[in-house]
Length: 205
Image (cartoon, rainbow, N blue to C red; front, top):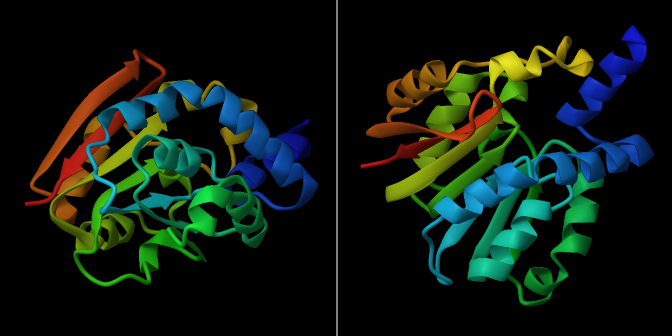
């Protein structure tokens, strides 16, 4: 059971192959309240650019496209997920509004100040350098831009067998302080389901 749990945990961090497809389908279901929370907080216009960190199979990107039709960008470590995300977000791809990259959020391949908003749902656990990732996101946001960092609580993750390896857990205040050190002007913590998940909303001056 230990080896299987560790394998599943690694798939959540970098989904690939058939197992990665299954893990993403599972995540789409169990993370639905978190996706809804991110969408409810977003304030963007069709002409804006938005970046999703760890886009997976494109579930959140498609929801954002349906709600706002903006310029959609995404970065994810998995080439397999890029293929699935393009397929899921076919309307935006057909209209030339979808630009997906395979890479690392700690080294974003974008110019300074290009995004109105950045989203991340359950990815910060896997960032190799969390502070560097925050700095990169802050750099790429325009003045007044917002980063929505959505995740499970440390206590909730510690209950799960597959989070023992490869997951770095955080308390809300830790992430708020990390963002402030990285250059954000404000970091506001909002609960989604008390004791289970939350979002930190970071604003750039």
